[in-house]
Amino acid sequence: MTQRPVDRLILKLAIPTIISMTITAMYNLADSYFIGHLSTQATAGVGIAFAYQSFIQAIGFFFGSGSGNYISRALGAKKEQNAEKMASTGFFSALLAGIAIGLAGLIFIKPLATLLGATPDIESYAIDYLKYLLIAAPFMISQMVLNNQLRLQGNALQAMIGLVSGAIINIILDPIFIYTLGLGVSGAAIATLVSQIISWSILLIVTTFKGNVHIRIKQFRPTLYYYRNIFGGGIPSFLRQSLGCVATILLNWGAAKFALPGQEASNIAAFAVVSRIMMFAMSIILGFGQGFQPVCGYNWGAKRFDRVKASYLFTIKTSTLAIIAMSVTGIIFAPQIVAFFRDEDPLLIEIGARVLRWQCLAFPLVGLTTPTNMLLQNICRTLPATILAMSRQGIFFIPAIIIVPRLFGIHGLEATMAIADFCTFILALPFAINILKELSAKENTTT
Image (tube, rainbow, N blue to C red; front, side, top):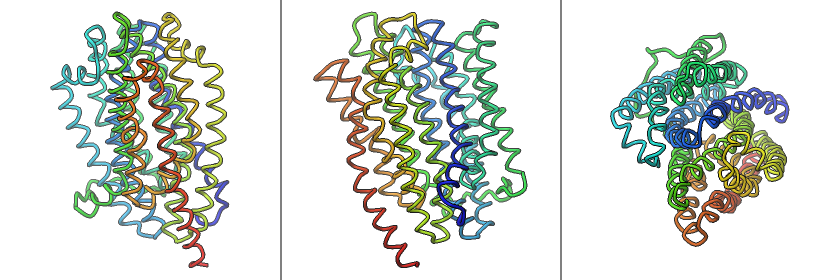
């Protein structure tokens, strides 16, 4: 971690992480594809349920990033015992949180579906998917903790095995449960539940392998010291993901509000499909950034600030080039990409293509904002990392979605995420400049 050239090291760690992230994103793409050919209402209903899935993921990222970043720094500083205590604390805390969230959601499932933006014609579909998603919550949350902890130890390949196994099983089971067994939307949710349990089991077994930080109940330390470190390293991820949930809910509400009578389901489904597409594209960038994070954490703990700086710049350059290629593809082939998920609804394709093109126009700016946020989070700069994490889905998006659609209607709603991306880039730029200056100064004092 502190000797090999950073570009090769990041690529070695990033490739399995990118594979695992993209295949994990295919959980949602597979559900969207198979359900999309049932009906527009079913597509919209599952899109509603995905909003709550973002919240579940937010909890997982909170405990996973918070504990994983600490583990990375502790291993770099040769404090293996502290790393093991943190691994156990993060995992068991997440498992308990998942049980609580799942039970609360099941008790209040109907008002939850309404809160998420379900209209009367799609509410039943949303509930059918939500109930199994809530049962899966403990496994989804603690599985994300295991994945993040393994990845931030530098064991991205092992983390990939668990995630990919579950994703492949999900894709296989989807058509069987949805069509062959005739379970429809519930079948897609059951397939997700089964695959999440399998992924969770494999990842838990992988933590017992030699060289990994082990999960042991006797090392569970629910103390202020460990929770303070989880909070410091995890709150930016939590806010970024949970605000993504809020953003999706607001988009659902806006899509229904600005739709013509009888077109609410098509509007909601269009935004849901594009969200899944952009989630898949973003997973590639997050995967690359997550290959950067363990390199950053180890070298920061080892006081190799020259390598932290080099890895940061390499990540920005490579991510931006990849995003430009994806964005150009999305702009050119937007109607065809959206139609792949539901070609039976021309209105859905029309709206979805416009939304996708708007998002692709601003998407290259994420090549700076995401690595900058990850670096600040990784070195425990909680305040700037939190501000930056909140900006895209919260600080800028929420005002944009309140103001812009009132002026330009549905066309304004379609552009809100692109506006938020542009504003986030403007905010991230001075953070990036300052951290580069700081790393250069630290590099000079340690040489």
